[in-house]
Length: 112
Image (tube, rainbow, N blue to C red):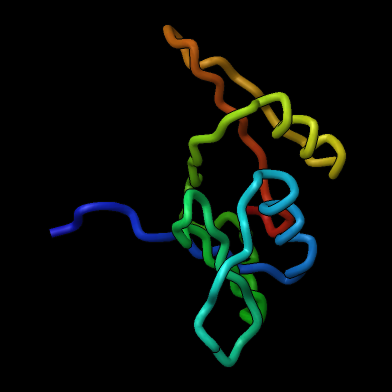
């Protein structure tokens, strides 16, 4: 039976820009990746490879596909907002009703 989420995979047609978004914008770290025969990266948070990026596959016409969203728990909302603003990434910031939690919604460079 399933115990936890292992990772998400996103496709990109601009690996450099996508890595900048996740590393510089959201604070992921590029880490070890098996020697696959296609370009990409494994991005780590908390020492775990939770986001895989693949760069050589054709992207679907409807970029978001069937995945509605990915959600990451993060710290330092001000730093995240500042990084996204430096990269000209539009976002929507909302306070979760009845909570002290904030939610920041945005798209990565490939539409995820």
